[in-house]
Length: 140
Image 1 (spheres, rainbow, N blue to C red):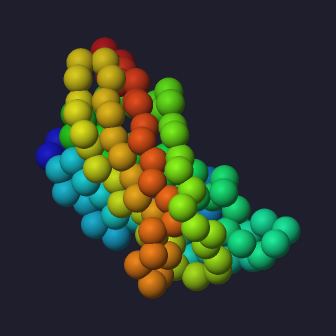
Image 2: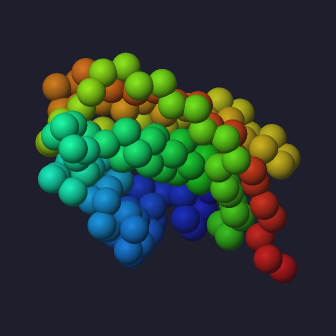
Image 3: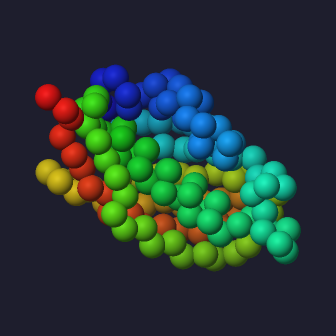
């Protein structure tokens, strides 16, 4: 694992310090080299007009899980940004705990590939996703 910003505590602090991730209610549960587990507690502002977990929130959780999985393998200060995200919705979700698990498939020189699985609190698979992530170099 990279020193600095790829550890569980460092990633947890980064999410807690992010206005967006705080609003979304995301938190880091566990992080290891190439893998991460994050969660959000779906509340009324996460639901669509039918009272189901909004697909955009599922995609956001998947994107965050895939990106943070890559982050666990990068040197401090190195940047990453998703350039492609494909989400396969398998079943609707509702209010309550939603867990995202991200896993690195490959990290190259300029691109990384990662996957994510999104489950509800009962362990039912809501969606899977694959991401291509562009890697940047740290500022000199």
